[in-house]
Amino acid sequence: MKLWLIYAAAAVCEIAGCFAFWAVIKSGRSPFWYGAGVASLVAFAWLLTRVDTPTAGRAFAAYGGVYIVASLAWMGLVERTVPDYWDVTGAVVSLAGAAIILFASRA
Image (cartoon, rainbow, N blue to C red; front, top):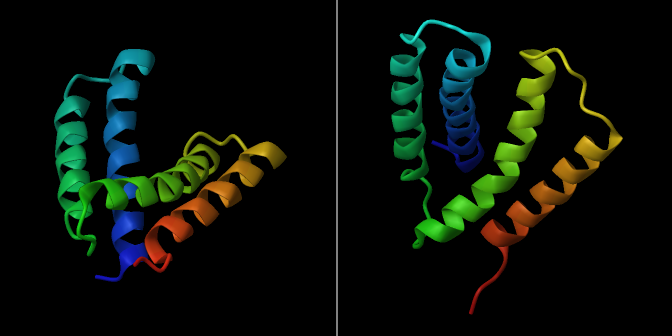
């Protein structure tokens, strides 16, 4: 899988898994949502192991930028709240940071 596809899939799994817990605790959904949430979070963890980098920390750090963008997309698409100027600005900065972490030349 391509790097960005892995990160995008991981973000969907992580956000969906966390949202399942949110839905039960904050929105009164059925506790059966916990099962889907756990399965989604397991898939998220597995996907991050597919990132081709010698250290887990670097894969996780770079993923952080993707997670921020995906979280704002979730907020807009699922929660129907439009990200504001500062949300978008922060997302662009975080993606730039992720790109530096992943693609910088190292000695």
